[in-house]
Length: 283
Image 1 (cartoon, rainbow, N blue to C red):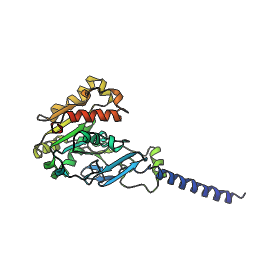
Image 2: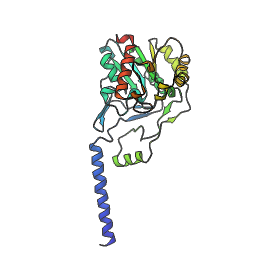
Image 3: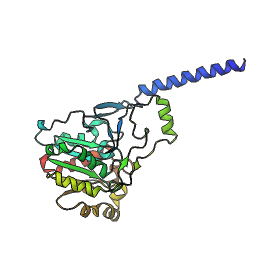
Image 4: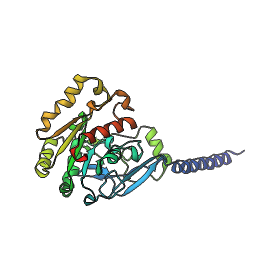
């Protein structure tokens, strides 16, 4: 068989395989993930008004304020409104919507409004509140979930792989780039002046603020490490706050982590119930 003919057969066979892979990946929801807005003020934030089902089993939804709930923000519909803010442990990564931290808390304490983004730092979270200052009078309490790494530089957008701003044209190309290591962590900004932003929040928001100090897996079993990284931050944050030490959650253990940082569904449930038990407005 002439070489040119073999080349044409291989070319069209490759097209068929690529097209079949593209159809299959889209069918199984491989690119049905949340999108982000690249923001100069916030670094990045989940795009408002979106929902989907990643891999056909991890449902997710964001309302008009990028909060991780399907419902629009209507504070007048509830007696109490609590803003829950944090990073991926609040956002939920590879977690079905009903099993996310805010969703579980909402089953016991309506209404909790979670706002979060993967790898947000404390400063990113504070800037969300600054750019949405008009929300503050509607809130009965703000709950931050913070780990030791959150007190570093603010994160900024850096990659369509880790924080996509649009649906990829090709599922195959996206997965290939991800498998080849194209995914990158958010860029750090060199800006870690969270104290200034937190002082602004304390001046603008007279309501109660709760800080839930989140231990990574190693800190759960190492009291010295936990003290150095978490307990020492309490004096930095100042007086007049309510602190929740998550490692004191009843029956908390290393088995509540599915990796070094993120929780299992049972760990999330324990955490949600413990936070709710420490919030007066929930009772």
